[in-house]
Image (cartoon, rainbow, N blue to C red; front, side):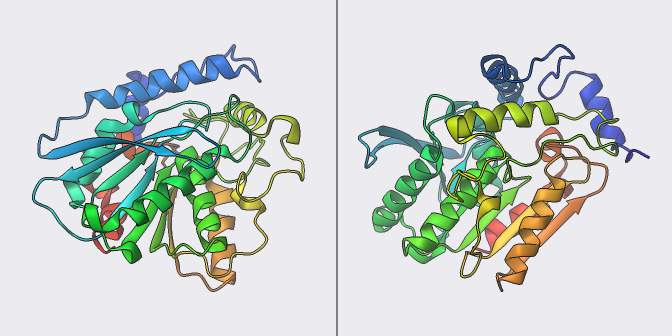
Length: 312
């Protein structure tokens, strides 16, 4: 029996909110998936403007010679000492700092916590693991510029939703392995495991904003010759393939009950707990992928994230 979809979400989807999921989508068509997701993310431009948030663009030189664009968002007059490294969604094949700008500005306005948004490189153009390495370069840059930006290096968190949550989780693993302190990982319905291939009779009867065919297409693009479901991808690419969860940063994870990432996110939380990592997990009944963005005007759907960010 399928889980009931939240009525307000159902109404918004019927009005065209979120990315369109065409019945004729052909698995493996990365170009079309990118277009569909970017069209859906463009709806973030409808968010109300928050004029009290300023932004500054920087460029970071990565170890492989890439010039990585990042954008620093700061609420005017707010100096909490904490900061967040933010990674956008888009299945690791779509999305950008520009498209996510209105959402990041909203988070900064609500919390007062500054954020450094990272325009990490996308698949399939970038090799597997590039997104996490770009993220780690941004983390190292933020830590080295902490004093100038008014940030305490011990109070930096990583955050992202969907693919961005997966990148944030991978960066948390790299930070642990390379000795860079991290205060928190905030993972919002994160994309963590290439083995989530479906089908799921409890979910497939509901309107999924990110169905299994999208997920298979995205992971195939990310992994390239490593192959989706293969053993060649390490935790810097597929965080769920990590074998050592010890000493990772404390985690906050939330996911909707009707999200195809639900089970992989719950398993990830369990493995963190089993390794002694403090983890807060929320599974929200009746909600599909990206529910919090669709309901951004309802503060009760943002309370967990906002509280955790303010506590940094």
